[in-house]
Length: 151
Image (cartoon, rainbow, N blue to C red):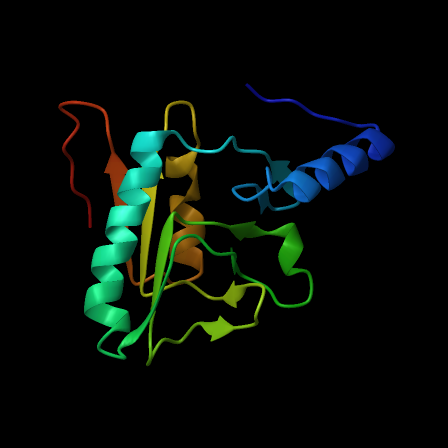
């Protein structure tokens, strides 16, 4: 379901309320459009936890890089908050070309993991991940019988 809020005051209050309650943790901006996402369900969160734990055991513990359970990825520095995505898991190796700016990374991670939830727009993020030069992207579709691979 798409919604457009043209009342700036209402939009600002909604964003402030979501930020104050932490409900905005998975919200993103796509070329200036505010994308509100609900908190993922239990299965989704367990997958994020599992991927993060395994990757941290391999990568972080060996000092090869860092593993983050979701983080802001942008294609611009000055106005990064107008265009960013938040993968479910992001891996940045020590030799990454992406740059850590504290609140966001400029450029794609070495590995991004996106877990599809019903009704989300994960597949519409693929061009963005290519644009920011994400080295590897794993898209997990939990729908039964949906195995696919693409280069």
